[in-house]
Length: 287
Image 1: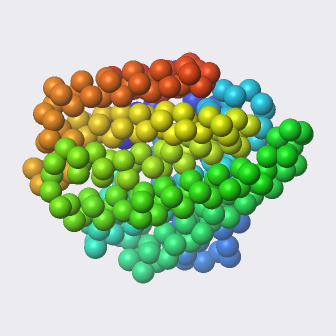
Image 2: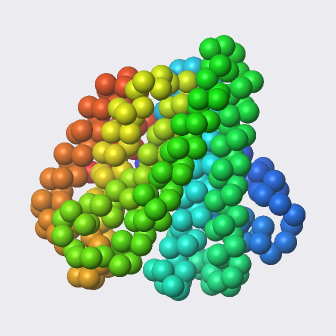
């Protein structure tokens, strides 16, 4: 997982997001074991890369639009996927971020329900983000309805069978370990959730919808770089039968592919006009 940079430009953004996240725990529902499980999963550390991307994109656009509700949506979707991934019937991981996985603390039944609850809450936060946008000054308030369509499309496309769910299935049941198969798993399981983050930051930050294809390209290169970097770091832990790009390309070629993805990402961000010091610092951690 991504390490926090020294003297991070992202620290104030992360603090702002986590304060908002903590306030919203109470809004998940009545206090009971299920809400406690959601709180445990959401507050169990993590670098908050995806919500920070939402904030960084919106900030780079310079329209001063509030996007914290959109950030929560992204984090809820991501956390739901982690809960499911850790289950005994999936990746069977007992620990997440050096702490017991949710199913080890609350049981499998509650863990499954917590995952369902956070997916639902993720969609609810899209609605809240649209409401917030509708209250802003023109012309941004006039784009609220179209932003809702874009956000719902991104969430359903990237979180479902064409995205994270389909990626997890292919990770568990790969038809082979070819380069094409591994890259498809990376795209569906990792890149798509970054697509949601970049798209949410763009549309709720007031970006032009005509440039969404370029935003998705930027998200693709960032997500690929992120996962290749992660695979390189995990190569000693991942067995030969696991989905890891280094097993297919070799470490040297994987490193070259990582550098290429970073270069393409930076070019795409420059094209969009949002290649900020915050993003430059983030991708520098991949090297």
